[in-house]
Image (tube, chains in turn cyan, red):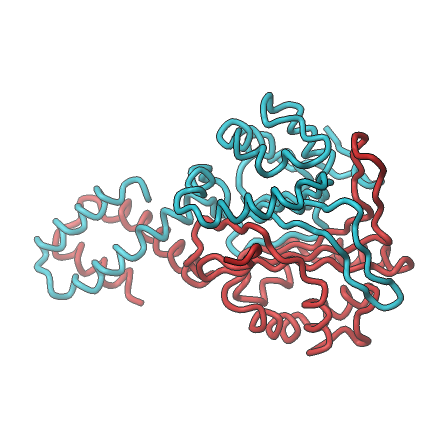
Length: 203
Length: 181
């Protein structure tokens, strides 16, 4: 299937998005949506509420295929050269994500896991069809998505889960190396077996 | 607590939105399209986890909004997720990516001529969009830490497969040798 965006045809990668949005396992999602006036109050307060809540990002962490994501509210475009400052009549919500896996699965997971939270993010955007059913929401995101012209990931072959696993197991391997010199062969064998057992899910 | 925050842990979320000069959009698209995907020039910026350039021809107007809203010109969006401070990142960008940066932002309205150095840094800051909410799955891990951890994990997997059934003393010696810093 081919999607036509902004007057050009983009070929799809296996992950279900333009190849330009993909670097290895990493996928870029870039979305602008038009926000109703009351979003000017709701969105900053919603962001603040999430940032202040100790566990409010736990659900996002549970979506273990998101490396990093951000939301920003755009209200004005500063003056540049001959172009004067523009105060937008409607604020716009910028959303970007760096994730791994399939585009469809990513949006599905967002819809099913963050159903209520989705309203907090996009409820103030014109045309938001609710998170569920996910079909109309996926279409909404596709309609408002922009393809990257160039996308870069520093460790493109690593999924979020692999990165988190590596960050968990690597210090244990390094700690064992520090201790290995002073261990007997039997002690080391026991410690190595314990590391393999404890770190099984990371390897 | 401020209403915006560009940082979480040791990571910074930079978003820059700059107007493209009307007669330069094709040049810019062509240049960005030619940047090699497999060996991106952004590799030179060792502090960058993820980055993108996106040409935004215009806002998408929803049929339900009272009236359409258009950008005054096409815009270039640049975003980067990196370790450390904005100033350190912009220093590195304008040093190690000087040629590409000059070509890219040289296509943008109001950019300094040439689009280099301190003047380019000021231009990018002038057009920065503050982040409302920033999420990172491993906010305290730098690019260096992540890459090193990935390497260690890979080695551990290979080592575990290789040493199955190895004699105990040889196992310890092999481990010390394999994982020496």
